Length: 340
Image (cartoon, rainbow, N blue to C red; front, side, top):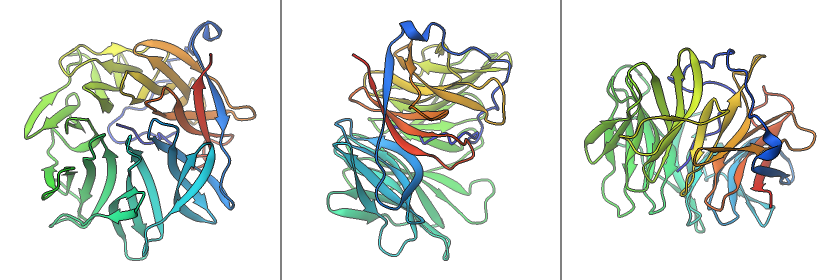
């Protein structure tokens, strides 16, 4: 359903981008163009990220409001402060499904407690930490309401973390402990399939059965998001990182022109990602989008040099942030819509 904002830094297991990739999307003026709208912040608001959408015009993310990381949604272009669960110091939004249910993580820094939550029209619902673990992060939610988390232990080490799947129909959470071949859960598909990092190609888990994506033998590939069986991510080919798409787990990886990594894919294959960055301390460039495999132009918001679209919403829009300092933790909220 989603992928978290890249925040200009590498996430676990994804290789550092080679500066040898210099190409920006060619002939951008002749391509599909997504035009930006910078959304207003709530009073007291500063930088953050848009990380989810219901695909019907609502966008949600994490923004610092009066010094506190809080959940904020935008409806009809206006911000609605959703806040923080009672008893916690901060709340980070990670994903949103078509019903408008949000999943994320609530933090209490003094007690070092982190708990997954869902947020709906009735408020926050904080989930219990699975037995044997010390804290759990919210990761993703699918259309039917399955929730994905990542449980961890303070002591670290092999086997210290696990994927947690709370099924929409209820019951005890399903735990999928990490292994050397399946060790960091990334995303959740509509049918309950989990996408993991692996020491080979990325792994897919469903009801106890594990499959691997199929890059060519000389290629390392990592899936970063999954939707309706389509996986998008990045691969390293000859020392160069490239955005990539798998039409199915058994299909060959197809490179996405002009991109270094793909971050999010919607229900019909619209994909949001990042172009390579040819120089400087940031390892990735600005936003790009593809309709299936056809690249388009994501235009810069006026007055901003750095911009990231990490959400491909089901209504065909993109969402993310813009800033003038890549070292910022996020920036102003931005939505892009396809130009007529």
